[in-house]
Length: 402
Image 1 (tube, rainbow, N blue to C red):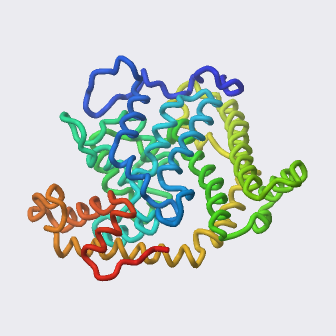
Image 2 (image 1 turned 60 degrees about the vertical axis):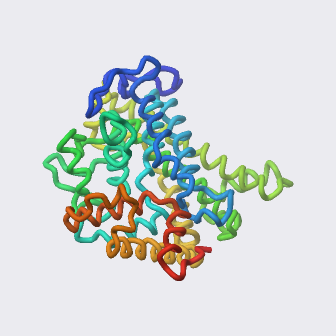
């Protein structure tokens, strides 16, 4: 196996040459393999560009140095490629899944998602993962021969289930979809191209999912410190972080505060990546999968943290949840942001002709559910600042979100 060196392809790596193909057949590219081509299609998509002006935690005008959905996505892609390279996996597939994983987020992050989910109750709700699938299979209109980006089966499969299977083998939804079932958009697409919702994701998709966790932990520490939501002394109460801070203090006792923070963040990322490589390498050696299909049929996820790092990750998230994600300042801003999305949805329901022409064309012939979904699609595609501009057009008062 190629786990130690990361220089050759493992037998269980996804292979672009053995891809299950695209929904719409296309001539192969003379210069790019199919997974690299998928990466390029994501990068050139409208939805990807919009990530530059969509909230991660802080809205766009709070400061130029906070993460946006785009900068977060690029960090995830870098980490995913590092993991894939070390484990002998396909780097391009890991990268495209990282690049695409947040495409379905509406403006204002999870606040926007909550607002749209409530607005669509009775019509299937709103799920950012299902929305990402709709974007890449339908809503992007760039090609003469088909709607969407016509990505490979492996990319679509990993996009839908990078966090694990969505159903049992007999089709029963479980996990976060147990209550409401698998989103309708995912079920509908699987009628066209079966994404095998019951099986494990590819090892490359598992890399992208864990890279997302690593990036979140590291950059939310950085952004939270920058925003003065907590201090380095505060987060040193998390044993994993405290150990890193202590090592830096011992080696660099006179290091200025800004460099100390950067050193902490750098070491968090490095420690987590190295932990995943060692733990996942052991799991892969134990299973000894003979091909990519064996990864999908494995009893559990294989690209994972060690038990000790699982505890460290839980400690970081346990610290950040009340001090950052539920900080009174963040709660107030996100509450106002939910109101912006709620107002826009109600306005367009009552005045659909205010939608751009291409969005209200044929609107009268749709049923209530299809109308609501179209309005949600339009709003979900907005950037933070465009949502605020649109709100100011129709309402006397628009919150500043500061």
